[in-house]
Image (cartoon, rainbow, N blue to C red):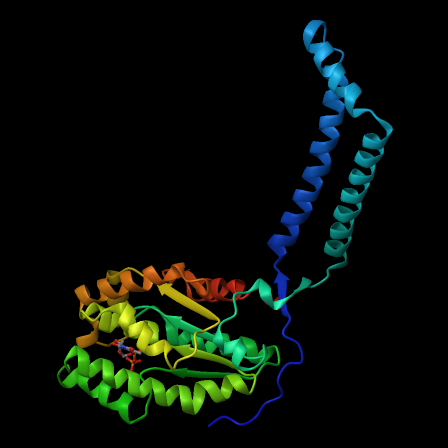
Length: 315
Ligand code: TYD
């Protein structure tokens, strides 16, 4: 059971903008100034046109040249110029990153953060076998720890009695879908009571490799109603603040399982995995879910996850 940590004092989430975003901001700022300036010049030139066109643009220019509008436009241009120059100055001074503090409501926060009054965070990584979940869980936890956060990682099925029974069944002969579901529910109930909830209440970041979305996918693929599975789980299991669905096509996933020297077990047959993938993909509409393309390199996938969390570490 985890011990009590120091919860973070504030539920504020920091967004750290990467280099590319800063450059983009400068480009956009400069672009706005150039476009505004070009419009003013174009209007001045267009009123010189002969005939109807000149009259038309002359009228518009006349309407816009009231002192109030002119002063407003000049003020706006000045303000935009200041913003742009400020960004350019930051870039040249080599500021590591731009940090914006935004209220927690900018992120859809689930039961995880609520359990700790905002300081804990509950993150779940899901996806079919071979998508690299366990590696990304470990790397994400390391990243949080480098920021001074206490991070707890875990996985399901657990190494508890129910989880072990399930693992055995994967190689020794599959249980019926209902028996399997009951065991996953028992295993998860214990996991929630003994590790997940206490860690969240203590303000920690909890990162899981699989959770009840796997039950929806894998036991759903065996024919059990996924809404029913979800309802039975959410009766006791807190929703995550962030669910990352690591998506990969089944052939690549099976090739990866083979490459690491494993053979696909009873849970991992091609057709079943295809159904699981579809169920996982159907979950991406959830407000707390993020779809991650797991076909890329480990670094690229990890970066997708971190940037979804609103912060890319300045290297
Ligand atoms: P897995 O994460 O692959 O564990 P290991 O690293 O020990 O191989 O999980 C084992 C299998 O359990 C996996 O194929 C998916 C399955 N599973 C379910 O069918 N339902 C669930 O609720 C969970 C959590 C896992």
